[in-house]
Image: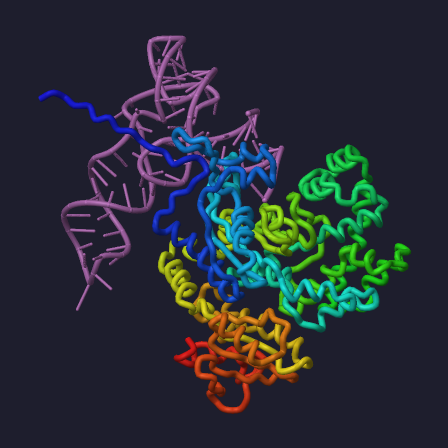
Length: 535
RNA sequence: GUGGCUGUAGCUCAGCUUGGUUAGAGCACCAGGUUGUGAUCCUGGGGGUCGCGGGUUCAAAUCCCGUCAGUCACCCCA
């Protein structure tokens, strides 16, 4: 018998990619299912697009230079150049622009696809990774409110905090921080640094660098500043002709004002006027006042604080983001020793750039690689010690709703009874989305995925985006969302609940009135799971 | 594209400086024994072209050159 040589070819996993065996996939799902559950509870709808696009879609925004960082390819005998998607924003903008006229405004979309970048892999950066994107596009009422001169009047820049309206920026930051909370990333581990390109421009003016306002090189310099040594920083600054000391001092001054807002729990009476007085900018027209760019940040911070997010937030004007397309609010989630975990901001011109109508928009992206590293380093990844049942239970608890509603239909739709209760809607919605953690779990120092974490699990709660007070229109809005329960909150915290399908009142199990106060027995959140027809 | 480190059993690694028996350990796996759980414990066993190619040498896992892969950092960062 002739000897036969078996030629065996071995194939290797491409550089920068990962194989997901059952255990690894489960860990990935712990992250992605948490993202999905949190997105749903905050009223975002999931979308997806093609894995590859025409390469033009990416070069139109960033120039031809980006091609070297794309995996691009052509069909056999074809001319068109395609590219695996390196990010979602162009696809999102394209999809939104295509259907803009028929889409509800605002439009809240999230996606959890994988992306591809032809870079050299290193810690926290691979060639294929997953990224969670959340975006709010085309705020309807919000835009009108901004145009209302009373809201940005110099005499009271904080008036918006009393209105209690949802703003797109706050919605986006809320869903972002809520995901960190879900995974146990407390403010001691991660921080959300908040900046604003227009406020940064203000700092430039205060620092005597007026000529650099809007200069992309400044964004680049400041974006890198935290990574460079002081010598190199001075060198880089001098290269474009600015004094780093002067600029830095101006930024810190503005930041102090921002910190004051956060630390005072959202009530600030004199922060901005003080700043203005100090710099002799008191004589401002309304137009100039708005150009300072502080009104948005000054509204956002108290709003976020009212939703229980203040402990993560910190104003930091050196957050400007490297990308050209941001126009206002910008933010990054940072942790010790890691590259940015998430980043995003407002991009009001981008939809238009992709052929849509002028559309205000705000969003962020969070990758699974850096997040996974961070969770593992802090003992916050289930199954890390090899305990597979822990991992299985964790994923099960998330996907079945034991750790919070994953109902695509809103569990509850919240409106105010009258003007006096307007300010109570958003905090209640935020509280319902956050849930109430149990004392046993807290005392035990339990893990984020433990089944007994919540006495009141987080719910899918939504406010209205409409400005109307007409009850029939609000009911229609609730029905359009396919919400289950209609909640009307009155001044003082009493709440009335109605089943939207039957229009019948829903009474608390132990009688009396529902309450917006999470410490009370009849807290609205109790309805979750205790009524079969609602769960 | 540039630089540092790493590559030895299925996994985690020791051995390399200073070349020299048959290349080792733990875990995992297989068999037998003990045993009132398929746990524990005891005994034995299988398993390695030392990433690949070339060079130096009587002799290379070890020294030299090349190459591939991984990883970290730089560049870049949507």
